Length: 219
Image (cartoon, rainbow, N blue to C red; front, side, top):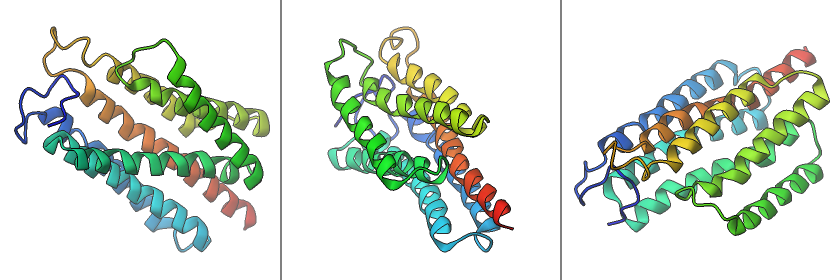
């Protein structure tokens, strides 16, 4: 049994009920995204349609993987939890510069190399955020994307700004889970799930919004 979170007290399936059930936030986010995709798939290119559908499905897989980990708490369930997260993260960090910022693939890869370097560098920070420090490079890149979008288009990417807001809240809740355990036995990790449902949906919507804007411009 892998015991990482405040809510778990034993090895039983429902030892983390809130942590398990709040993964439905990802399922709901995935369902809403897929509904938007179904409405627009006939109007956009096949490649854009594949991007939106794959990212929306991946959000649902994140919820499923996390549910398995917070119920079974085994090594393989942990991989089922983290692999879809990493896939979505890599896809977003590579696709956002190309689709939303209209950067070349070379520029997008350059930004991704910056992310990889920061992921390595964060290991040397004297921080103990209950494992949440590994998400600092991701939120740093999303903030950078928001700034680049404002600089390039003179407009705010509202969905991305909302994603950043919820990401700050979710990282905070994840970081304090074990700290508040003695005062609040269920912990705060469930809030990480609820907020990240919004994070994933709004990052997806940012890509969706850019694709639909390009379609409107081509008409």
